[in-house]
Length: 541
Image (cartoon, rainbow, N blue to C red; front, side, top):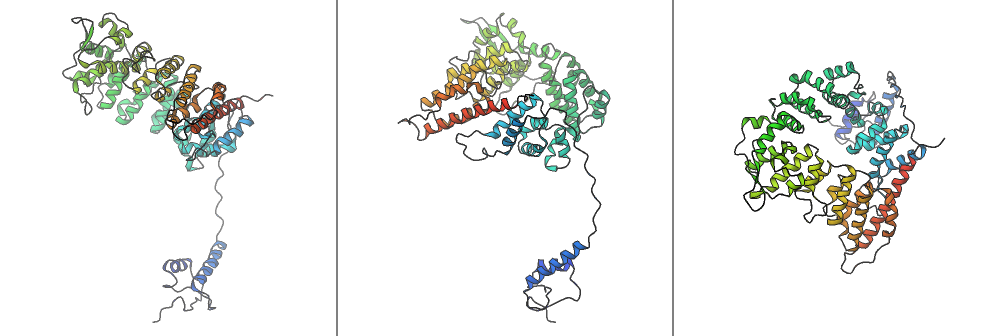
């Protein structure tokens, strides 16, 4: 039998079905006959015409489906509306894309200013303009660092919108269950959510209650502790870091016998942060047998005899027996004992000396780095500012970082135990003595906006780096921090730095232009931040 081809006219007495047309399109008109009217049209055109007719016929035969239920109205937001000028600024910040892979020149990076703007708006307690909520949620979707502040600013309507658009489902995760948590004082609702909620909901409600009433949160945890999974118990236990007190000790002591090693370690860490706990006393007893004052030499020296074994009682109290790769067992055990011992036991053990005098003592047999590093960790864990100052040393000391801080990470953590003003002064002194090359991590520990001494030190150090021919691009990170953290009041001091300097003969080509451009961008950004703060002030009237 002769097979019809693309050039063979063929027609159906009845219109072809949609499935027939679809099969013909998939196989091709050279392998499957196309419907034609016998008027010589090419097969592909005839197929498209037939599909168009079939489409109209199909649509004409459809019945309207039932209307979907209308969504519930968006909840009211009782907060005062954002001032009009600030709303326009937010619109510009959300629309800006200048920082995405393009060279900005002297233009400020608005995307980096958005977190500060949100923090300031939340401090004022404003409600966002409804028409900007979608753009705000889109921005938070792309940047996880924005989400907490963005959702706080978006308010209850963020959840309402998240139910309508799956792209914004992160809003429902961060406010568990897609609904607001009960107030921590609503005992019945809190207990019901704790008993019946999803894991994320339970973590959120436990955290909220812990901040409001530590004892109530601990009682919630104790009520279901034996039935919880190990990985869940670890997350719940971590919530006790907030408002940790001696009242938590009995529960944490019981957790030391948990079958999970991670839970035992976390419980031991929390107990060691309570200098008056029984665990802290046990660890102090062990640590004191390892460290003593040796008077046999020409000057007093700290002698160290690290543990020779790690027994079951030590492991129960949180000492990890197996050291990391490349670390000796004895030094590993010693560090854990000293870290967990209350710092208050050392003056009596070491001749009544102050922390500064103790840190200044020589340590025999090369144990100084290990001992001082453990004291650093103890000072951070116990939030002991006196020991932190001793270990940090003077910021202008020849040995950058002080006698006990063995790394920038140690110094950063020690700084966090100091008051904000003292922290800024120490970092300013460090920069004045050592420059900016090692200061980037330390700057991240300082409160924003930077205090005047710190701001002046950073600007002066940048100017010195420019004048001495410093490699300009190596300071881009500090420049970026300054744009976000420098007090706008420092803008006037930048005016003298905006001129483009002459290229140095021994300098790098283009360095002068970079420095001039960077200082201009910094000045423009600071002025913009000042304008943003003014726009957020309540409007008169």
